[in-house]
Length: 337
Ligand SMILES: [Zn+2]
Image 1 (spheres, rainbow, N blue to C red):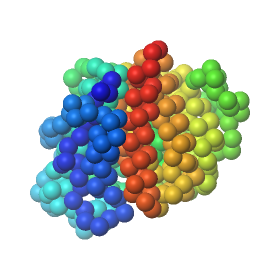
Image 2: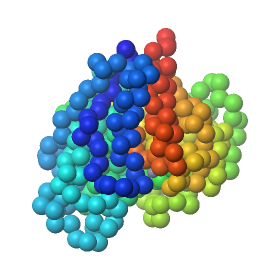
Image 3: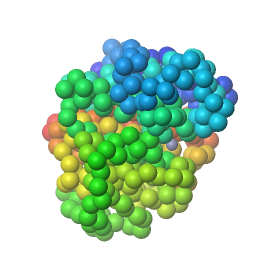
């Protein structure tokens, strides 16, 4: 049995036909976790769809109306990059409900994983890059509305910048002091004394602090500023990536104390990814997950996890990377503190 819950529904499947986005990955991750004994059936919770009221905490009424009535313009549908259907709308409402459930569950158990979600390219008034609804933002706003949390931090490790997240939570941000290029490590045992090549940009945040580590030279072309953006050069590997992540987490947590950490655990920094240009290994990605979980647990910050992108040439690799995120959570959260 896991020391936390997985949130999953067969309804997470995105009905988008043959597509670079492997919509069947969700079911395959759930199946693999059960078949390999990492999880038991009783570890899995079935979410309810978010309500329209929940969705409207983040998204504009005009946009929600267009989605519910199937009246997106051809241009808006093109930007979404997945074929519109009423079934797709349902799947995104469910993904948002799953993230709300995972966020609530994280407050109870310390961590929870939705085997889906992480649609970080959705904006209040439009969707893009396979993302119709920003499930993570909806979950944060819903928990804030319910007075369960006041503040949150997003840690986005998808290879693509979290442009929707940055735009939604831009809030009252003002330019801040440049971040130190290297600060005290979050982990005493960190092997890195100086960060490798790359670029870190920072700006002050409102009630949600956003961190994004991504390939600089990749979609989205326009990257609205997150609280901390780490723009990684093409081909960055495990050690450089982990050093930057450690640096960004320690910088972020020096500036901000979140009540909830939303970890967007994209599988697409993988070296074999078709839409990514970084060079992380499967083992490096697991070390990435462990780092986020260890830092959060050491500070008693609940973590909700969503899976975001993953486009490995071999879909089995994508499934393996996501399963290892659950295994990393199990190892970190089952261990004695
Ligand atoms: Zn991505």
